[in-house]
Structures are given as structure tokens and as C-alpha cells.
Image 1 (cartoon, rainbow, N blue to C red):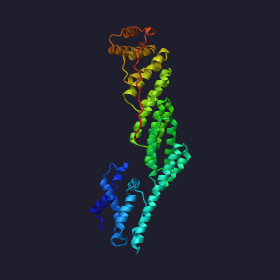
Image 2: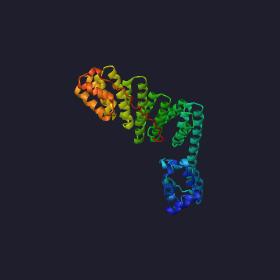
Image 3: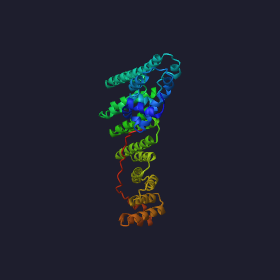
Image 4: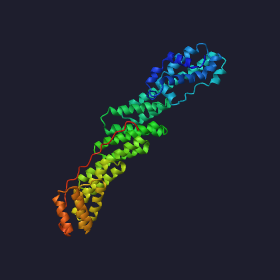
Length: 393
């Protein structure tokens, strides 16, 4: 038996495991025929010398490539194992070459194939037991079955994770369901610390659970889960989503603080949002929060604080005539009349028809600072920032 490509294509057509390969998610984006040929080519190369030297029995072609290859390689999970570089410890070629009885050599190959199939079957049974315990809420026993499944077939871990993600999508978004899945995912990362996809799935679940909790008003819990996501797995996409969601959560906290009259806290939250994601919405929100705090300070004669926060509002591109007017009032009350006149003039430049600002400018020029009027204008509303779900970390 030769090992040329023509033979590999012949055997690929004979055992028809290409249909099984199409079901394997990881293979869909690869050149399928090339993968199939390479997979068979490896096996043919491994045993070609034994075949050509007559060390294997005459029925090797039919029995091995149909009975064994179809029974093993046609199993899509076995294909995934090849793709993952899984080592099934096939009999060594030298051992077969030294075997004088061709039937015994063939039997060794068949025994190894049977051993692999048995392992795959035991992995399947353990996965079934996992789901039985998991669906009953017995997470401890489910973990044990997961461990058994991985021992028999390492790709069981990925199958169970994918199943849990599908299971979660079918549930009613109850926190209990999310926490059960997170507990299993944590167990997987503990048992298989080098399993990158496991860490990615755990991070994705943390992030998405946080989005759910934020929608239920549990914003601090949502923030904690976003941070946990980045501590579990690192990728540019995940980092971008987490920063966006943290900006959204702090924006929400800022709006809540503002509604309670806690203008100082509101500004702090809005500035935090900017630090996570600086864009037009978060910058304007920080400006509005600063202006609200400045107005409150001005009413309470905290002129220095008012000056600082009105200036911050202007830095945030909130260039409104009312803010310039009120900043002028703050400067006047601080006995800085030149600065006051400068901002009254800017306010009139922005709104030449404002009688209030004209009056303030006139009084400032006559040094009548106690008679100045605060505009008390209605500032823009805060812009809400929606949290985003993660489909893949």
C-alpha cells in the first residue's frame, strides 16, 4: 500500500467520515478535504511500512479502514481530538514490524481502536450523568461527573461548556441559573488552568451576568462582575466591552445620585464613566454633572467651588450662555470683577438677546456684585449609556 495523495482520497471516499467532520464547529473554517486527507495520511504513514512488509494480515485494508477507521475517525469527537492534538497512543510501528504473526499485529490495532471507542463511550455516559445531576441542582455530583468525562475524553469539557451556554439561553434569566453555570465554569478553569476557551467562556459569562444584574438595578454587583471578567481572561474585544459596560454602570450611578440631590457624587460617577470610555456622551454627562454641582455651590455661596465646576463644565464642551453667565456671577462674588465681566461678555456673545446677562454685565461694571442674577437655566438631560452583551470573549 502506497502513501500517496491518491490513496488518501480513495480512503476518504471509502469511509465517508467527511460528513461527521462537517458537524465539528472547529473544522468549519478550515479546508475540510485537506484536513481529512492529512488525518488519514498520518495513519497511513504510521503503518505503511508494516503493510508493505506484509506484517499486517491481508484483510487489513477492509477491516482497519472500514471497521476501525469508520468506527473511530468517523466519530466527530475523535476528529476534534485530532484537531486538538490529542494523543491516543496508537501501537508503535516498530512493535508491529517486529510482530511475526500478521493476525496478531492486526488484532493489536483493532484492540487499540476498541479501547478508544470504549473511552469515548465512557466519556459520553459521564456527560449524560453530568446533565442528570446538573438538572437536579446537584452541582457537587455534576462536577464529579464532569471530571470523569474529561478523564475519558478531554473534549467532553468543551461539549459540556457549549451545552451550558445553550442551556442558559433557554432559561428565564434567573440569577440562580447564572450562578450555577458560573460555578461549573469556575470548576473547569480550576481543573484545566491551561484551557483558554474555558477561561474565555467564564469571562463572557461574568460580563453577561453583570448586564442582567444591572437591568435589575443591582449596579454595584454588575460592576464587580465586569471587573471579574477582566481578571479571568484578557482579550482586546473583552477589554473594550468591559470598559464600555463600566462606563454605562457609572453613568447609571451618576444619574441616581443626581436624582437624590447628591451632586458631588453624581459628578464623581460621571468622571469615572469618562475614565472608562471617553466619548461624546460620557464627556457631556460629566459637564452636566459639573454644572449642576456648580449651581448648587453658587446658591450656597461656595464661590470657589462654583468657579472650579463651571470651568469643568466648559472644559467638557458644555459651552452654554447660562453657564458663562453664572460663572461670571461666581467670579463677581469672589471679587474678581475683571473675570466676571469677561464671562458676561462671552455669555452675550453666545446669546445677544439675554436681558439678564446684559443687566449683570452693567452691574458688574458698576461693581454692584450683590445684585447679580443667577440664570438658573435648565441644563441638558443626562445621556443614558446601554450595557452591551458579549457573544465571544
